[in-house]
Length: 391
Image 1 (cartoon, rainbow, N blue to C red):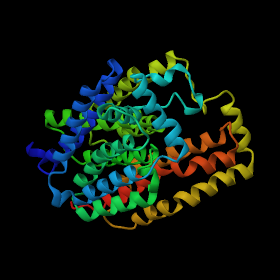
Image 2 (image 1 turned 60 degrees about the vertical axis):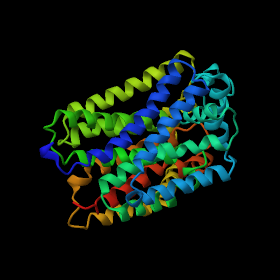
Image 3 (image 1 turned 45 degrees about the vertical axis):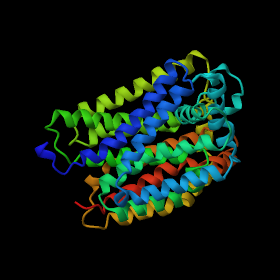
């Protein structure tokens, strides 16, 4: 790889490896139920990979401290939040007791959003299988396995410990208890940020080495596949980011992005979406009349102002920091075009969803907006810090 001597290949092997192990466990659950021994073997493999990734304590100490805090937080506190308890951990509990990845597709307890993807619930159930019993505290500690790959990617690409420390501190402020309480929104946010950073980083490299092309495909595929399997929003983010990169990130071979996109969507459709369709499980937001409701609310100035007020309140400061970042000589539109285009499209989608919600608009905004906006705020934070990296 003489043309890409600055590529931190060895450091990026471990996040790819951890992500692929998680996906491998996911695929195993789809094929056959995992018993206690198999679950224990899977978790030992995953833990060994995590320990290997963090072996350089001096370099990785911000991540180690953060994950230790996460371990303590998840073990010390129960699961009082409704979505965490009644959706993600409830699905994990069903997988554990019924010994099937598709336990929730029987239509029981429709309040738990049975169409939601289950990769987090699957790994929580795997931990419970390995231990031999279930409760609603220790299974959610597996969030640390999901957080580790994107944190390693940021630390590797930014190349400065202070930036990693600021990023961890920043996502702690932005995501707060959503990081460790069993919700998926913070995980969606950090994975979205990682994919944006990967695409920005890869765009500046030369791809004259076939092995590195394969490695880049695995990097984008593994992170995109996990993002899609975390929550429905992950699918929306993936089908925005990777197609955008095909046109905007001209330094990356189109084959790398295209293969990663097709492979991640194929995995999602095969493992999850097709069984959901076969079980006639629907999404509560994608109901008849969404377009009519959106058009009706679009004509209501009060509804538009209400939505805009939430956007300004919860992400105005981060958009402002991003705008200020453009005054630095080292930052140009070409560097940020992927981020800016993604933000416009994703904000537009959120705007349409809230306009078309079948629920009371003020209630829906009040109960979900802080979580829905996390991918925007975390990605802005990550990209701003990334622009201060050692070059």
